[in-house]
Length: 117
Image (cartoon, rainbow, N blue to C red; front, side, top):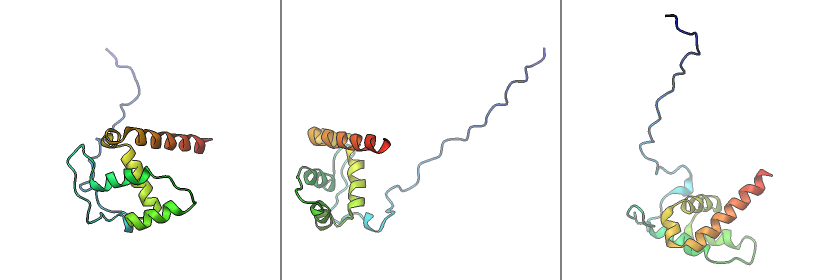
């Protein structure tokens, strides 16, 4: 019985394994704060709680928040917002402050939609 000359099977590479250590800092200001305490899985650490408390504040003047970020966390604004965005995707943050995290997620989604236009 002849076989049909169908397409050749495509070789799919095996999935890549995760890097050994994903916590390696990639930027100069990505160094962990000495007061940052490792939290159990599913709980927010001290630094994450401070970031959420910081985000509850309202800023009246342009640049005031960026200066406060440098003063309080010792981070550049870019690195702070990277940490904040990762925190917004953390289910423990949503459980800790659902109203704030929901508002920040909506703002992030709105800004992303505006960038696509």
